Image 1 (spheres, one colour):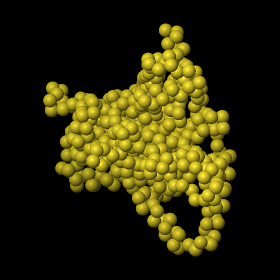
Image 2 (cartoon, one colour; image 1 turned 180 degrees about the vertical axis):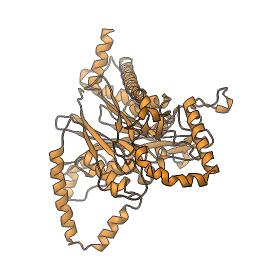
Image 3 (tube, one colour; image 1 turned 60 degrees about the horizontal axis):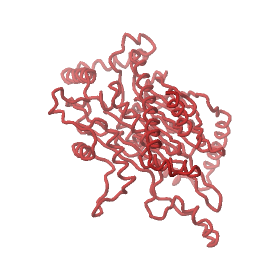
Image 4 (cartoon, helix red, strand yellow; image 1 turned 30 degrees about the horizontal axis):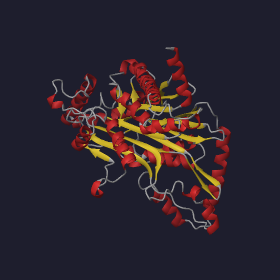
Length: 534
C-alpha cells in the first residue's frame, strides 16, 4: 500500500496536469450549491485517480521496460503514453464524462428536455496541437531552414497553415456520453488524417441519427429508448418535473396572452425586487435546479504543455427538436491552441497557448463565436483579465458580433492615414499597458465588475460565461498558467486543480452581485505553475 501511495505521488510530480471546469452559467439554487460543489470536486478527483492509474498501468506493463536504458527512459515513457492517447484531450474527455454522468448537470444524464420531451445533446472537443496541412512541416520550417534563409537573403516569413483538431456532435439522442463521441471523431482526424478512401473527407461533426449510428459502429455506448422498459436512461425525474413545469407555463401563456401582456408593465416595475431574490429570501424562492444555460465544459494542460478544451450540453429546456447549440459549433463552444515558438534568423517568436470553454444561451454564444474570439483577444493582449474584460464590454455584451469588422472598415475609410485618431489610440494603449503592469498580482484572485459602458447599453440582455486559460513557459522551463472565469449570468459553477501543488480540487459558485444580469459581468482569475519533473 505504501509503495502504491509513493508511486502515485511521484507520478503526480513527474506528469503534472492542470484542469479547469465549469458546470454551467445561469442561476444555481442556493439549496443545491453544496451538491454542485461536490459534483465539481468528484469529477476532478476521479479524473486524476483514473489518469494516474492508467499512466502507472501503461508504464509498468510495457514489454519494452527491460530494454530501455536510462538515457532514453523518459522519452520512451512519453511515447508510450502518446500511443495510448493519454494526453490533455483524454483528460478533458474524461472529466466531462464524469460531469455528463452526474444528474445535477445539464449534460448527458439529467439533460434538459426539448419541446417534445426528449433528450438531444450537443458536444465538442478540441486539441490545441498544431497540425500542418501543407506537407511542408511549416511549424518546424524556420528551425529546419534557418541557415538556408540566411544564405538566400530571403526576408520573407513562411506562413503557417492548418491548426488544431476539432470534433463535435449535435442534436444526438441515444448516446450515453456525447463527449466520447466527439473525442473519437477528433482522434480519427488526428491519427488517420482528414481524408478516407477515394478522397472522401473524414467528418468533423455529426448530427442526429447519423451521429448515433457512427457511435455504435465505433464501439461507443448507445441505446434505443423505445426498446427499454424505463425509457431513455438520460431522462431523470427532475428533468421530467422541469419539463412539465415549463410546458404548463407555455400552455397557460398561449391561452391567456392578453392577461400576460397586461401584467408586463407590473412585472417591469417589480423587476428590481425580483432580481434581488438571491440576496433576500433565497431559500423561499429556490426551486429545483434553478435556471441553467447550456454547457458544462473543461480546459486542461498536460505535462507536455499540450492544451485541450471541450463542452457538453443538453441545451435549453423546451428547445425545438433538432436545434443545435453552441456546444456543437466550431469556434463557439470551445477553443484550444498550444503554445508556439518559431525561430526566425535565430530569434524566437513566441505565441502563448490559450483555451476556452463557454456556457450560456447557445444562440447568443454562437453569433459571437465566443470561445475563438475571446482566445484571439487574449493573444493580442498582455494580460488575460484585460483581454476578457475588453471582450465582454466591446463585443459580447455590446452585440458586436459577426459584422464586428464593419466598424474597423468604416473607421479606416473615414479617417486619413495621418489622423490624430491613431496617435491618440497609441498613447491610450501605452497608458493601459502601464496600468496593467501595476495591477498585475500573481497567485491572487482578482474580481472585476463593470457598471459603466454596459449599464448604458439599451439592447437586449446577453447571458453567458466562460472559463479560459493562458499558458506560457518561463526561462526555467516551468509552465505558467493564468486561469480565468467570467459570466454575465447570476451564478456560474467553477472548479480547478493543479496536480503538482495541490491534492484537493477547488470548487465554488461564482456570484455576480449586479442587479442587471445580462448587462454586466463578473470576472475573476488565478495563476498557477506546473512544475514538471521530467
